[in-house]
Image (cartoon, rainbow, N blue to C red; front, side):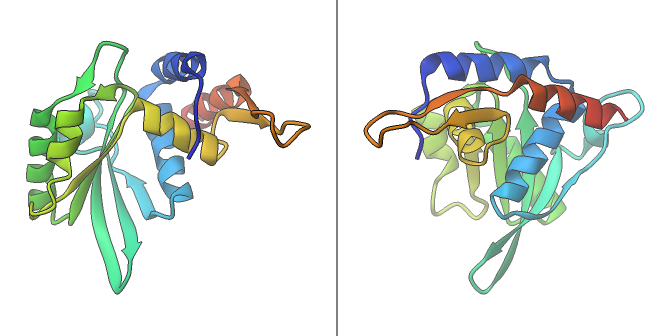
Length: 179
């Protein structure tokens, strides 16, 4: 996929942490739509601002697969530099999937995940698989779909494209969810 400069990853993470939670959830929703998920729906926050009235996930989506569709429960974690996805969140999301009738789970995070957690989440013989999109993969996907990251095509084929943060995109995103 894309090789992302470390400085751009840091810039993206800083920008993601500045977003309001509704804007963060909207970005995740747009990304999933770009990735061919269908019927991506936020579940809505309660009046107190607590997470989605105890449902345990932030969005629901449908993933078209050969021969049908899979219902996906999505956990959108707006994590800082020192926060990581933990095995407990994978287990909790599996429980949420079972309770809500979802076929699989997806954790999208602005933080990091360890190899052990990613391996645990991808256990192929588990009844409810959970996939993880952590910060490095999130940045690659944002680049691939041109969501909040601009790319300048190099003049020579041997040159590396230049990429940077599209601050206007994020400002518009925040403005969109506050309307």
